[in-house]
Image 1 (cartoon, one colour):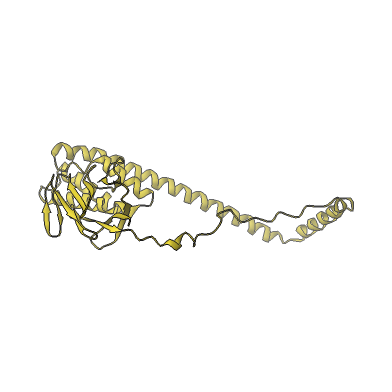
Image 2 (cartoon, rainbow, N blue to C red):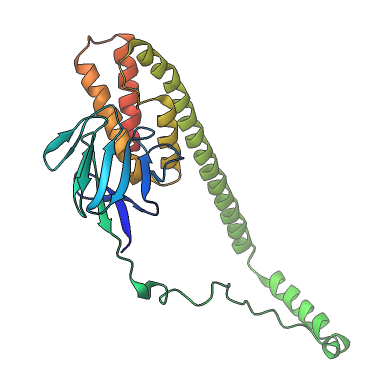
Amino acid sequence: MQREIVFENADGLVLSRSPIVKSVSRVGSHADCEVVFPGLQPHALTVRASNSGFAVSNRMDAEIRVGGHSVPKGESFNVLDGDRVNIQGLVWMSIQISHVPAVREAEQPESNSPAQIPLPIQSTKEDRNSGFFIERSKSNKQEIEKTNPLLIAIAVGLSIVVAGLFLFQKDGRNTKASDETIALSSLKTEFAKLELSGLLPNDLTFQSLQAATAEVRKGNTAGVRPFFIHLRDTCNLKQDQMERNTPEQKALQLIINYCNANI
């Protein structure tokens, strides 16, 4: 039976599912890992298939917990289907049997080709020769000339209003994207301050924040929510341990505000 690695939050909400396709799978935030999950260290865990289930090796700088026991860096442990592994106190990983209904393929439409749009009826040689189109054009012109000028003015006014709303919405979207870019770029300097002070761990870098922000803009907010929560809580903890109105404290507050806006 096919197994998959499942990540969940504290409430049991599934954040991601990744099938296990190799006997040895690396789990982390780096793109070269077989199972990629944002917010983890580049290579956080190694999962190996064994006769009794799966063996998991902790490659992170911090300990992880499974079944109420802590597993320090460099040690391995065995897990069975459904065992939950607590990582960084915010996200849970488990190995589960993949259940994919066989009828799901049959429920898909047989063809994805677009619906055919009927073509307009073409005029015939006889219609043109009989002057049909000339008479119809004259009739339409007479109807237009009889139309109330007020109705024409209203139609033109509505067209102008709709065009203005479209341009306003487009400009608003561009302005929002620009503001997000400015806010993210301004945090690069704040991260530099905190890195010089040694206030943030190695897994919380400006590059990891950029990657998580890119996922939010793609619509994958749930997938990177644990990362933003972890970063926010770490900054809150550091704030409680320092004096107010220092450059470092202000930098931490800016990062906290950014995380809250993306959760």
